[in-house]
Image (cartoon, rainbow, N blue to C red; front, side, top):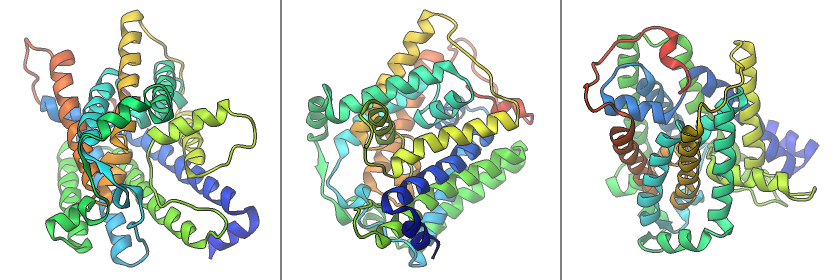
Length: 368
């Protein structure tokens, strides 16, 4: 097999890191081309507009669910040892952390993965916000804010195993998981046709969803091949990996590598390639101090909230949801609800109700 050959040539540590980098490059490219952004999807849903951004998110979400559940159904993947399902989880962390993350992504005008994609195309606002996000996430993980995170997470916990498996709660099998994803994919196809979503909108979004499933499949396959290194079964997320990448940069040389440490630079490289190929790379900065304060506050909320919830808009909202982890679905709902509320309170005009519009040009997919 290819993975066996890769491990034989470069070793287990470099094999998993290179796998993370390769998947990251493809994720970054597809995310940049499709303008995949949960914040934009939440705002479109909240305001009742029809610009295709929610459709793009649904393509990613449904593809990730279908592909991941199909891999499990075929016997190619086993996620029972994944952290989202096997470890003890926190429902209080999912609710509060998800709400903080949802509010933060509205303030920062992008979730953690979107900030990384935008930073790679020259957006200095996203670059600063991403750095603040990573610092806050690291502080929440093992720094000054970790006691607060642990305290909030301990308020309402849930056992691992079947207690965190939403499919088990519903009495569904993995075939039902595929069907569930198929229903949302059909909805995305209908809306894409009605809204005339451009090629890269739906194709790139499907690519993003496939990368989520491919990450699950690859890490599981490598975990089965490795003997000297414990490789966790995981998929794409950006809270923990952002903190890990920050510490890699700040630590002395010789830091052990892993999937997450290949993922973040891979996403940046893939986004950069897309921006250069389509001539979209350009430097952008802040307009004033008020907007800078807003971005920093949003990044801090996302950093702490993502670490408290155990996942971000991608880590919980797509990767965790694709394996039907209960806490991930709670986090996803909290992100969505808080994002809708904060957009309504801060950004949505109160004097004029938005009129649903049909946008068919590429401008509907421009970065936030």
